[in-house]
Image (tube, rainbow, N blue to C red; front, top):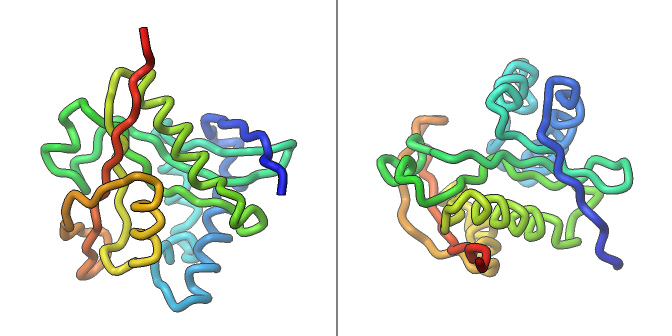
Length: 176
């Protein structure tokens, strides 16, 4: 399958329905495998939640040839999941990364993370940090295959008894 060209657009309120559709697609897929992760995107709070994500200015819509491919948030601090390390100025933090199922198994997620690394390096930072459910062995293995290293497990108050696996990867700073 040929590699498709990706475009990254900072999401605005006009992109709300498109971002929500991608997140709901992913949430339905997770639910079909028994996971409750991202259930908020299938709840009556979904619209308000996505509006809040977009309002931060960190959410991006990923497109290819007019089709919505994915979404992610790239933010510059993250005290909730990383504590004091989350405000150390060394990293960018990716959250809510989702690829629409129509584009599964095409390495889109890895390319989205590579784009995040480029943005992080351009902002003079040297680390990409991400997290996922500590019990999600498949996703942790995926991140490890992309060069991430485990950094710890933290309890996070996003749902009862939720524990997050912290992962980190170095980014290459641009050569001067």
